[in-house]
Image (cartoon, rainbow, N blue to C red; front, side, top):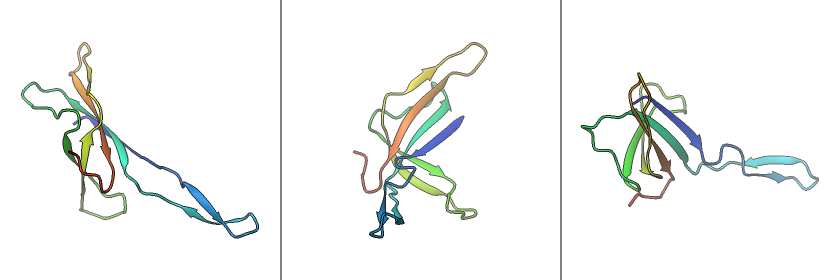
Length: 105
């Protein structure tokens, strides 16, 4: 693998609660998954996942845990992008999507 970029679906609070006089007293947070862009060195010996296929993405925890990793069952959300350049390995980039409670079919 060359790189992974993970972007939360809602990276900011989706709203706020006021206390009756216009001042905000709480913000509403929503953890509803993420989109990921994964770039790998292309290898003709590998079988790459197709559109809609389930893929397990294992990443270090962002909660601050040490030594543990978290696995997310994502699905391939679009056709892959291929990049071929002179004097560089060919790469394949896949868009993955994770949503809690949604199982890839």
